[in-house]
Picture 1 (tube, rainbow, N blue to C red):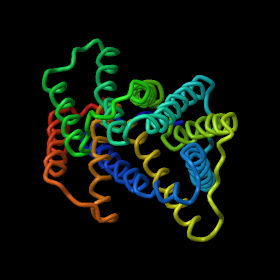
Picture 2: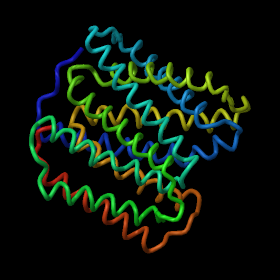
Picture 3: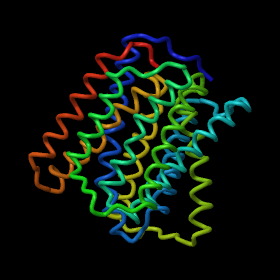
Picture 4: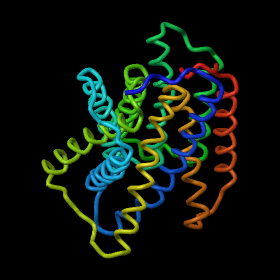
Length: 299
């Protein structure tokens, strides 16, 4: 157990840098994920492997540092709740891909920064400023342009799952930021991941959808890289929530789709269109504006 860090400019800056790193890390994981699928695995199995890999790496680190993972009952319940919300959101996002294009699912999913801000405002009984709302809308618009989202393949089930995914992640962020500030982030994410692993094992077993990748060196390298980049992102996100608050973390995570597009251009040699560049600039400019305007309170 640790005490919350005092609100300060240096703490806030560190938190923002951590979240930017988390966005970059999950972007690399996004690029690697199709390679994992090409090995014969599927989304549910990969989700379980990610949680298991994170628990292994995180558990070894906690052990070498002599950090206990024991929590008070109330903190354990809240960690499990936040972990369930995160796992629910992840599962819903994966499910939405079966009904609507990935770009559209990601765009709808990125309603979560706005939902997070509105949830915090409701808790604080404070109406969000016009500036805040405009920035969230501009960021979402920038993502729509950057991702090249069209409306030709709308599907109610797919949209519903994507919205539920956004709600799940928002709930996880707010729950963590409001109830678990005193829990060390590594212990917090370890407990959340353990919850997610149990749920993913249950879901995969019930669906009978196990599809493990082959055990050859190349496959292990690709899967290992995917797991490690996910681990960095998962930890970084909730360290960011601890240091800067749920809303600021959620807003900065808008960088993830932009970085994924950039990496696809560099690594996969996909072409860059003018509208993608325009959308990316709009997203980045909006994030910068909100961070400069936001109070250094970590909330």
